[in-house]
Image (cartoon, rainbow, N blue to C red; front, side):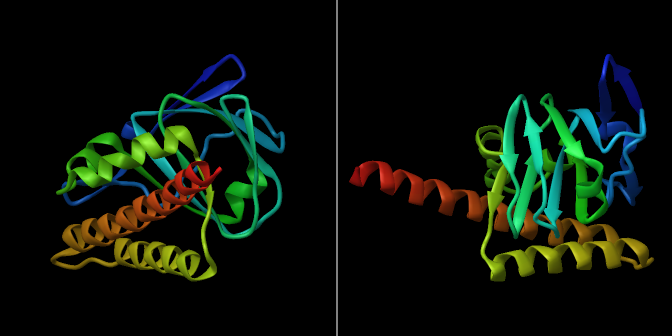
Length: 185
């Protein structure tokens, strides 16, 4: 599951996922602690991690670039990047981790845009309404993962796909407004 690389904890999402039917999905990420410090240095492998931040304190460092967190933040951690994340943040956030295969098996190529966007900017702020929507998606996925229903896998996949589309839409909105600002200047 986790292999320590110097002071960096390697997290292999592909090995950590819980199987719901034939899907690969992990609702919350229990990071094996290498020490009792207030932060962990992680290297995400074979997956992507979505963190819906409830709190607005602290920061996250991704490949030596520090991002200050504000209210209504979404953090998308792509694979193969070194991340320093405060354990307090992990305790007060909703986390969804999925394997690369799970993302790549989705029905539309738009969902793979999440990889490019998150490599360029891993932390984004979303509006209050959109943040509430993201929380609702998470809660529904979490609730469905705890129930045993005939179509559980399909329901979770559908809700997660909608969540990904919402996140990609937020990235597109962010980049379009940034592009418009550059054009005006």
